[in-house]
Every structure is written in structure tokens, then in C-alpha cells.
Image 1 (cartoon, rainbow, N blue to C red):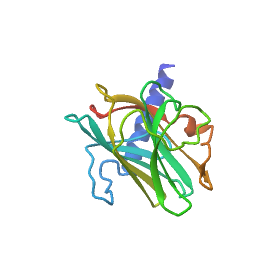
Image 2 (tube, one colour):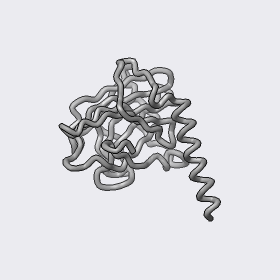
Image 3 (spheres, rainbow, N blue to C red):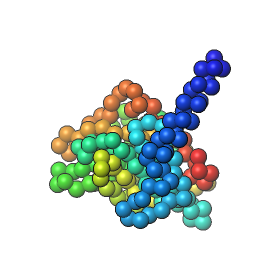
Image 4 (cartoon, one colour):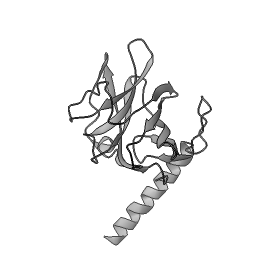
Length: 188
């Protein structure tokens, strides 16, 4: 069992390092010239989270990058304030709407049958926008974090769009493993 655990740990570290190098985690140049203090490659779904935490006003400027997806997909990243899975997540969502524009908005997830409808989150998001280029969505946002906390569960996903309806993400493989934690103050 110890050998298996060691092998899994080394594989995870190698994957994270390789992914960060291949996806230019810390050296990625955003088109808006924004620079972030911290970035971490997320372990699945070709995703990277960049952010700068401002302790004086308890806000986070972030960019969520999700690569390897067609512009006919939606992508989402969210914080779960009270739980560890999708239900309860407070999400940032982006997709290409029927006018061809990239539409970014917030969506609270209250059940597994969500269609990621637009709605206010349990914390304020004073700024949100997104872009799509080179098979990659990037969501930019400013979050006003809940009082007294910087560490949360996080989830991220992608799925298809039918007309203006966001369809369910895949229910297998990496789509079921796209959860983790983030601490904006400590960079983890």
C-alpha cells in the first residue's frame, strides 16, 4: 500500500509540474496585460487558476483558464462555501451565446439538476468577464470573499450548449474528479 501511495503522489507531482510548464502557469501572458501573484494548475480538465488576494479589503482578482474546449462548450469554476462538491457551489460561468458573444455571469448551484441559470451568489462579484481564444476560455472576476475566510472547496467543469441551454457535463472520468481546495491567502 505504501508503494502505491508513493507512486500516486509522485505521479501527481509530475503531472502538476508538467501541466504547469506546458500551460505556462506563472509566465502566461494575458491579452489584457493583467498579472496575478499566484497560479496553480488544477489537476484535471486542462484548467489553471490565477489570482491576487488583497487582504486589506478581503477581495480576490482571478482568472480561471479552461483549455482544450470548443467554443460551443460552457465552462464554470466555483467556490463551495459550506460543502465540498458541486451542490452549493457559487459559480462563474462562461459560454458563447447565440449572438456569438462570450457571455460571463454568476450562478449558484442548488441541485444536481442545475442548468446554471444566472443568479446572485452568496458573496459579491463586482466584476466578471470572459474571453475565448485558441480553444481556451478565460473567466476574469473580482470576488469579495465571505468574512474571515480565505480557504474554500472549489469545483470546475465544462459541458455542451444546445441553443441557449447549458447541458449537463459528462458524468464520468475527470468531470467527476474536478474538485479540490484553494486558499487565496496562502497560495495553495
